Length: 139
Image 1 (cartoon, one colour):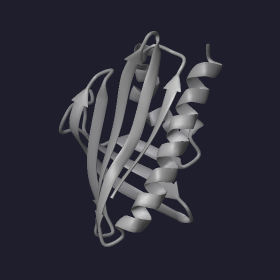
Image 2 (tube, one colour):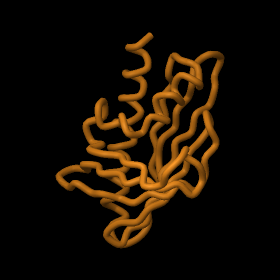
Image 3 (tube, one colour):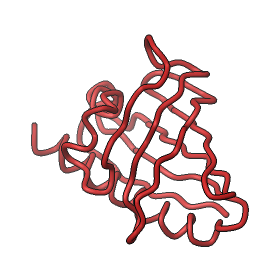
């Protein structure tokens, strides 16, 4: 089951990437993300692991996410599992004449996929709006 949210941001890819790349700061400006910690040492690369705690509906869930694809200023794909449900999460940045199209989404499968899809869609929509607001208000 797939979900995604796209938004155009009036800023170049480099500026949007800078915000997205500062994962540990996300909880400061995104209500549903409670905590992000790097489990792996060093810079983010394919194979790095993150612990992500998010509030989805009435549930607070902590996921161990592994980066399976990492291309700076273009895309990040993470994979994790919780409560018998597998989750792939992606963040894609596409330059558009000084602006950036950001697409955030994922794929879920397993026992609670229907619930994870609904929550994942809500979080994706929130992240897209929060990134746009944070970037454009700082201009």
